[in-house]
Image 1 (cartoon, one colour):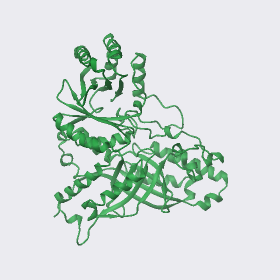
Image 2 (image 1 turned 180 degrees about the horizontal axis):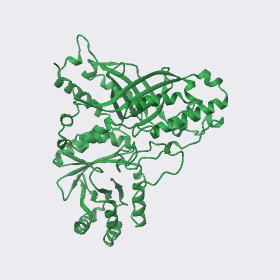
Image 3 (image 1 turned 90 degrees about the horizontal axis):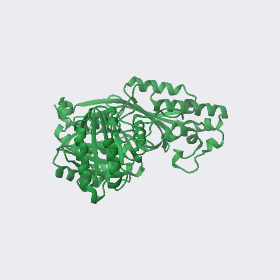
Image 4 (image 1 turned 90 degrees about the vertical axis):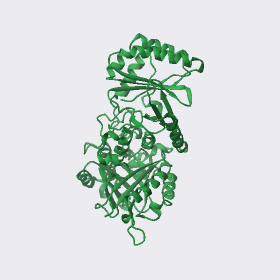
Length: 516
């Protein structure tokens, strides 16, 4: 009997496609349309805020073409959760103006093609980067303001080509080649694969997200030439659209381009006609870029980026995050701590114990692919002075791109940890650009401070990491038992003297990133 790959399932998924009854919408009196918009917005905001479950994600997309007008996508831990969401929508006044064009039910999945160790229960052999990558596949987050393409697919079971007659090794090789093609789109495309075996008409539902719709076309086209697809792939209908915030529902129904924040004339036709709905601006909706600072208590939280995940209010001021609190405390000590959202860039940092030259060669190959994407800022290898390990730092304009890059970086040799996932409280001062003539002085100052840290209560370890391509580019990664212990050190005279010293020897202001 042919061996079936092991699988693990995550969140259940509903793709709910709706058409608008435009004749009924045009004929409806203003008060009915206003009620439909208000109730539709409330429904969509509540779904994005995940008020109905302990975790998950939701989004609404406009759909181009005649197959549908709207797409609601919901990820939830239980199948009953998405079932309840369907019925809640039918209770809204907006539902009366829609008809369901089609729907698709599935569950996120990873299989034995990804990692034997993961399914064999050898937890000590699974590095944190891979664990985080798998977690992101099982519990995905929907990127902000991105184009989407959804299509169902199955593996062929024909007389000449039957996927299920192949051995596990043959299938694994084909899937590996298929994955190599996907890596060429790291940072451009985020993909969610969900199994629909026994749930719907095909075997998987594939959802592609990207900031440029032509990237979606390109990856699907390139993958058609992989043997796994050319011989064994069968596809259903394709749907394409664009995400927009619930507050743009009136603009969508009025025929405006959405999201309105990306286009001129933000006062939509609906608002000019008196159908505006107020609420939070798009930048304030619950999918503000997520943070490297850990998951927190929010159901959407995940490590990847540098800002805390946004709140879910109706335009009210959001509570101060722990990240912002720390930055404020450092500012009070006259220590520059960067902007609240990490200088508007998002970083992922992984530590490796592999040979640095080998690691750099692998990173250089990935970086060549990353550089094709406008969202890529920088990827570099930093070597620790006092520990036998290196750090791979990848910086992007968006948190979703940084998180996607983390999945590829997690496959680098010798990965042992991801910054922000260690115990205790971690800080990392990035972009310490030292004037070349002061490079040696900077190292000596670090050694002097390091001697103090060795006896400081609550201190675990501190590394000076130096860019292997630029000895004047470095960062300090410091791990503490708690935030309070770290703040006590920041208030010492020794640290104040170091800050003063840095003003003379650094080429520009250091930027601090907090990872725990």
